[in-house]
Length: 290
Image 1 (cartoon, rainbow, N blue to C red):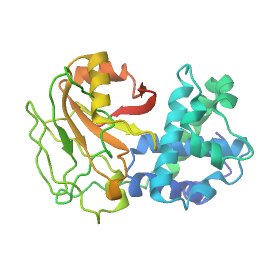
Image 2 (image 1 turned 60 degrees about the vertical axis):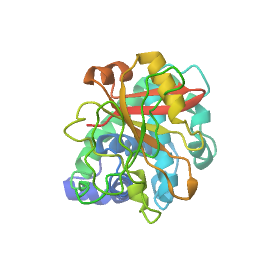
Image 3 (image 1 turned 120 degrees about the horizontal axis):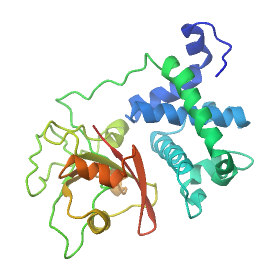
């Protein structure tokens, strides 16, 4: 991708707004850096396509709305590589409201191969370089490691293997994953936005067996629905589900799921980096959390 910049410092200065939105994604929201770069690359591609000052427009969005918008962007990118059989636009309400005069997934789908290539090029030649010095700090061990807002990956009903639902810890507690899930203290009301939205960090006991599951805002999936869906489709593979309550009784946006084997991760994601499922008509986005 051609650039008017001759040095890395010039590239960073030219993409100052893009750097700031990326910083919000990986530092304020604690989203995964590689996925966040793809999201920003997609937003830059929207501007190239003619959506004027899109990144500048979304930069001041509140945390919850920006998180939802980033999730919609990841959903958009994931569906580009698939063959969706339903109206994807229903899962992109923020994009539809923010992009004027009109936005639709189906306007991009016919040129998906070109678009995927262009986004990857922007990520490689702009984002990987211009964002190289923006490194999210790891959560301190003394601080609570909050979980995906509520269980986005949990499933069970009567007749399915028993399990217990974990809430994200508000104090540092070493998880004990045996046959049941340990219940941990809920996060206090005063928890910060970034704490609310950040996933748990897998421990040495769960490394390679940790899934992060996201809900679409306004389409909460219960732990029972998730347990039932996963068990019916992939068998008895869930070891534990960790979820974190939101303040003010707001439905959770994500969940952490520990499966019994790393091979279960491969089966659930179909060997891909991410996967999208529809549980009772509601979208659940899943990815490995290493």
